[in-house]
Image 1: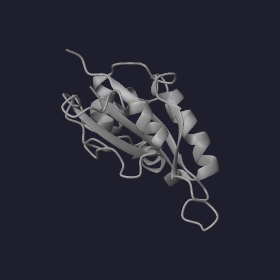
Image 2 (image 1 turned 120 degrees about the vertical axis):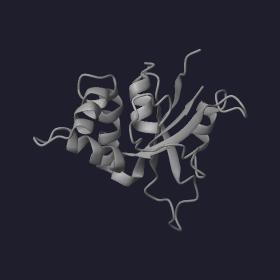
Image 3 (image 1 turned 45 degrees about the horizontal axis):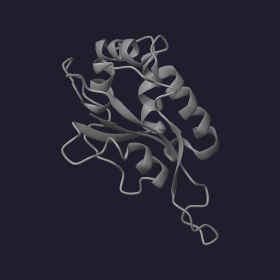
Image 4 (image 1 turned 180 degrees about the vertical axis):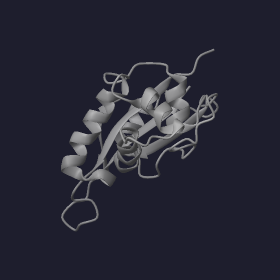
Length: 152
């Protein structure tokens, strides 16, 4: 039986934590499936530790769903995040991803960086996800954008 990824991208509302904004701190920006609809266990292992047969040090393993998950993302994940129906849920900020991705292109790459480049680099389906996250980070900051996922 295979493992699929579900989720999407959220951004932190710039008014969150101020007196003039009373909405949710995080807002669902986009579902994952139009950007990424693959079943890539190397990427799942590298990013989240799910199906990690390559033995990566995962970037964001087993964090669960954020406590401040937006209602839009909760709705998106609602049919997938059922007790006993998950093999994992996690999230990762653009700041964390950008740091890892920036080291992939360096001349003095380690073997792990070369492998990450092959799994998450420009020749993969992740480029669409990362492009949207980077664009949103330009407006909301690197720590104000995150990818939230669940697996089944």
